Image 1 (cartoon, rainbow, N blue to C red):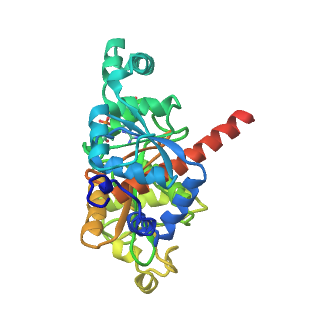
Image 2 (cartoon, rainbow, N blue to C red):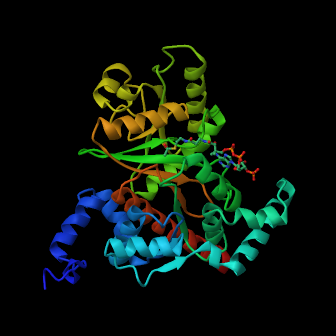
Length: 365
Ligand code: ACO
């Protein structure tokens, strides 16, 4: 039967499959193993806005087989089916939504968007037209509770993909600005980098918000944040607009979050090297252990830093984890790998579980 052609159909060799999965999701990394384990306890519906793509479908297959998520595939039905067939994927049970077949939803979602944005210059006609964009449609599925989380961004630029989510879903209560974090894992421990994806040049006050969101997200991974506020100077060694901003952010953040370990401003190597801290800055709150959470002065430094450690440093980068949205949405980095997609979905599933619990608690009070 091996040469009948039919035999090419994916007959899973389970041992091989699990080794492959371990490689993909980095099971050696305890941090993601825990998240994936939590996701599997109660898989949530994750809508993929770019499902007519091999990497997304392959990730969906693994997520479904491993019971991490319930994928919903948004895209051109014929193309999705073709990719499934060509690659012998087993996604026949998976829900496919082709927007052009969704007359009722287009109408309903369009009206909802119009309602939300009629005082922001959008007409009812435009609202419906915008729903033909899958990032709007997918965000509206999450907004209405017809899906629990949205994953997009694999093939489009980040800014264009995040805007529909901001307009449709928006920020969580008590949050001013969203921001993006990366988890960087080397063979020693995880590090958390923020803001790596959203805010171009945050003020000291905006940095304080970013620090709060980041601390929460680090705790989401069961890690206690030890936060360094980064600069090209150490504790006032250089004067200048950027060091001054980071000094102000440090002071304000210490006042606002007295329970957190925060210090700065400091250079990145000092933050990560307890020996250098002890020798030169023994007064620092971080002197004993060094930092595991790095707050960057602006988008350029944060974005460039994480991409450098990923490419040169050979560290595993998990993200970008979008923080501060009212419901789970993640915009992938252009060209993310299947493994990166799986990691982001697992995170979104656990976030969806958590936000549902909170909503239930609030409504039952
Ligand atoms: N947090 C919360 N809400 C926001 C934020 C934010 N950081 N930024 C904008 N918004 C809101 C706006 O208030 C607005 O709300 P409203 O329309 O209801 O009033 C809505 O989102 C849309 O805002 P716009 O003005 O249309 O968008 P803006 O021009 O502010 O752009 C964006 C927002 C796209 C996030 C912008 O800040 C940006 O381009 N950031 C950089 C993205 C980027 O290029 N990252 C680097 C690459 S990412 C990577 O490498 C993976």
